Image (cartoon, rainbow, N blue to C red; front, side):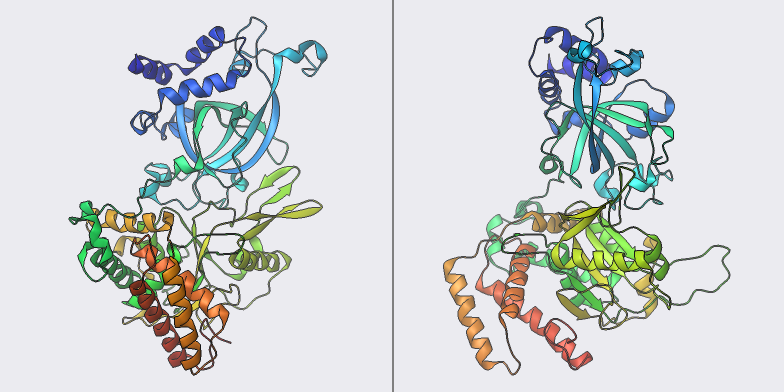
Length: 553
C-alpha cells in the first residue's frame, strides 16, 4: 500500500492532489491535509531520496510537466499573494493548477462574489545554499555555469546557483525565517514573475506539498562520535591521551597544516576551534570565536603571459571546503568593497541579497591580500562597517528605503591578514602564521591539494560536524577549579590578567571539549586549553612586541 502511494506521488502528484481534494473538499484546512499526506508518504530518508534534486534544473529546461522535485535551499526573501483555491468546476485550483488551466475567476478577483474561491499563500525566493561544498550538497548543481534570472537575489550573483520561486500553502511557512536552510518538496513549473525592472520573466516555481524544517535539513552528524566506527569502544573518549579519537584529531590538525598552512600546526588548531564555534547564547552573549591569522603572505607574483586575469586563492580555502559543509570566501579589494553589496537591501519592494546574507553555521574566510592603494566610496565604507558589525555582534542590518533593521546571524569568521591585523576585520584572537615552507604552498590550486583516503576524510568531516552541533556541560566542581586557577594566574602573571581573559579562555575550553567530542569539560581539557592559549601569547610576544593576549594593542 505504501509503495503504491509513493509511486503515485512520484509519477503524477497533480492527480494525487485532485483526488485528495475531492475527498476532503469540506476540510477546514486542506493545505494541512496535503502536508500530512505527502509527509507520510515520504516519511523516511530513503523515500525522500527518490525525489532527485537534480531534476529541478533538468525538468525545468526539458519541458517535463509538473514533476515532483526536492530543493534544499536558503530562504532569501518572503512575501504573500492571493491565489484561486478552487476552479468553477469544483476542481482544485491551488498548487499551480488554476494557472495551468488558464482559468481566471474575474477581472477583479478580490470582488465579494468570488471571495470563497480565494485564499492567501506565502511566497519565498529560495537559492541554492551559498558556499555549500560539493560533497555536502550531493548534487551536480556546483558544476553548472548558469546563474538564475534573479541573480541579484543571490549573495554572490556571478557564481553558479539556482534560484526558485517557492509557494507554500496554509500555515506551512509560519516557522520559516530568512537564511533558514530548508528542504522543499513540491511540484515544479515554469511561471512568470515581474523582476526588479518590472519585466515579466519566467522562473522555476515550486508549489510545495511539504517541507523539512531547518533542523531536519541539517547534515546528520553525531556528538559524541560513534567510536565503534573508529575501532574502539565509546568509553575510550574519557582518556584524552590514548585511543583513535585523539589520534584522529591530531591527524586532522596535521593535514590542515601540511596542505594549507605550510606546516603550521598551531594555526591549524586555532582554525579547528574557529570552525566548530557557533552562537551558544544571545543573553549573556556567547558568540562564535573569530580568528585573525596574521602575517599571512600575499600570493607570489604571476607572470603576465596569460590572456585572462589569474586570481590566486589561498590553499586553506580549498582545504576547508573539503571539510566543511559551507564556506564562503570574501577576497577583499578596493573594487570588491566598492562594487559589492554586503547587506540585503530593499529596492522597489524587492529584497536584493548581500554577501553576508548567509545560513547559520557558514564559515566566512576573509582575505586582504588583493587590497592596494585606492579610495573606499560610500558603499565600500558601509560594507566594511557591516562586516565589522557582523563579526563583533553577530547581527546584520537589512536596508529598507527609510530605515534598517538588524537580523541575527551565526557566522564563523577567519581573517587572513598580511600585517599584524586587518583594517577591515576586528576579531577575538590573533595568531601569527609561521610556515615552514615557501609562499607558493599557501596558494596552491584546488587540484593540487593532497586528499586523505575517502574513509579518513569522512571521519574528519564527522569530527568537525559533530563538534559544531555538540553541547558541553561544566560541573560545579570544574567551575570552582577554574575560578581558583584564574585567581592563582592573576597573582603569578607578570602582565595584567582581566575578566575578559577568563571569558575568552572559558569559550576556548568549551571549544576544546567539543573538538575532543567530550560532553563535559575536564581538568585535562582545561590544561590543554591553557597550553594552547599560552603558546599563542608567546608567539605574539616573540613576533610583535607590544601586544596583549588577543592581538596588537
